[in-house]
Length: 176
Length: 417
Image (cartoon, rainbow over all chains, first blue to last red):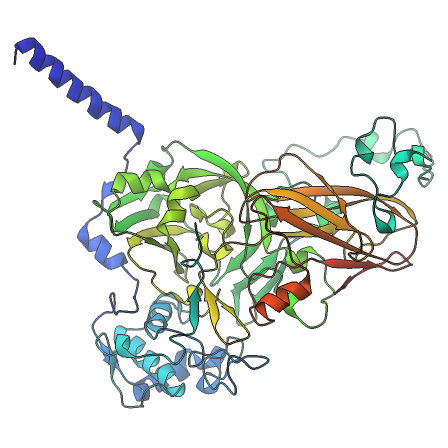
């Protein structure tokens, strides 16, 4: 390649790179793996995102009575906040009784939601062991597990909720 | 009698173009205004200096009843809803201070200097942005409504609830939103082939998360920074919210701090236990994102009073999460006959559309209804049709026709008709 052609080639490369940079400001910084790890707060039905730790319903009962019962009532019967357990009838009755036991399709959602949002007065204040324990308690009062069952990253995703097959994905069924 | 004053449908509905005709005014059709007697040449306000300038204007003191109706949890006041007073507003834009609210655990007071947005998951490079960096991006505006999936849910009740239209259907508001197409930032991060969903998360005390299809995000979602020209207010997601045109309000995550691209939804509480519609057979519809075609008459509506028989303008709002409103029909005889209303320009996709039609009230009982049709051919259902299709326990996505009964004394009540 002649000197002139080399320069021209170099010039074209520079020019096209400038073109790319100008099409979008590209002001983001590369996120560190620590930041991503700390902020990855989602818990998926297959258990991805569940942290270390464990707890059972017996331990969870004490946590529930201290942090949850004021709003959700004794044994999840409801109060200023919604009913969590103790459904008296099913989903086809009028009115239907929607609780964790009758309605929620995934047990992992409990951990995800409680960890990010509860208790309202001090979200983020429960330890992982406490979160597993109170999750176990809610599953126990919905008669899904036994009081001594240990709930952890290993066991929680294996729980099949009673209403696991109760949902129709209407987005997937549409043409869009 | 002018030809224009001949009813074109039952109950006294007149041609929608009536008010546009030159020379035809309220007075020309013998509308009697109450006599105004001028007692003095100059009123009080005309005889002394008015107030000084102000840094940020407020509505007139005489409009102090035009407010959101708030309903918080007694045990946690930041957990609740406030409704837009649609019955007291005109046009298609909701004033920022009257936009509806739904908060799960209060309004955070976020200093934008310390707020970051992380884009990660199935991308070639995970990126984190400062707000000041994002504000340098090229922006675009769109007018669109946001409607809570649970709006109008009292419509499922067996008895018609007697409440002002806005405090019933006002978990819907409409603004000009300005921001960055999310697609632009995703392209910078580089989308991996397996990505199908996006999980969005807010930086409030509830850290609410929810999944939405990547396809939708790439199609028309915005990172919104401005609402009706000013920076979004704290209760609407300052410093940045996700805007998901036409879809359930809950997806428009406020105080946005994270977008994660995944191959599957996270199955968060708000896409499983909530915002799913239970059918009579016990199954529930999930990911029913699009807000259906809907309309309601805002004037006259519950709580308003017709003074005397004569000419009125019926007006209301129509919208559809599927696209543009192409037609709104109004009935003044409980649905026996219908007439086309005038659609106020501009008529925009996934946006409030104002409709109007003149009406000669004869002073007798009447039932007013409106029904909207969008450019995908969806027609707003009658209440009985919606219940036939979905049962009565779905809670979310109530979009049936609203009926207002006019009594012979001119009072307006809500009826199922």
